[in-house]
Length: 153
Length: 109
Image (cartoon, rainbow over all chains, first blue to last red):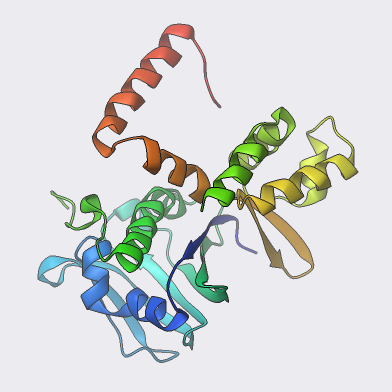
């Protein structure tokens, strides 16, 4: 039972296939997710790494479930900030569901720890990243504040 | 989109529903029983209000085993802000809101 959990549901005017690609393809992620690129061969059990410019490791974990274009689950440990890293692995789930001409995207980021600092941190990060992703898919342009890796990190 | 926004404003126009959102903001991911515990409303009334909040996508449901958990979904309110508040105004507005809270001795906790 997770004690800290962030839930976000958004509807994006696109197809499940395109959204799935946007979630993992570096050509997309670097535009809406602060220049980050995920390194992974996308198979259950594989290592997953989320890296910033110059290959700087931001987060890492393992793929638990990979079921395109429906469900992706992975473990996630932050590598940038000691108090978050110390908490160990959290769990990230993306669920995609066709809803008319849109796709319902549910993101769940959870950790089996009360008052997790990581979950508190991502709770302010995800809304920016995901609304930028929505903007990118619907208009072709991501939000400016998510296009660059944060200075000083 | 505009029909969706109508639902959000209607849902937010009711003090009991705003109180429900406050409860979820304080402690996200509650069951109906947990939500009822702190509110002076019948279980039926809470259920009805939750349905309106769900239709407006302000509340989302997650099933965990047999437990039905309610979460505050920040997306619709974020979209309202995006529509009427320019990005560069946000920092200033936040500063002014904090100043007002400080001067008036309010707290949102």
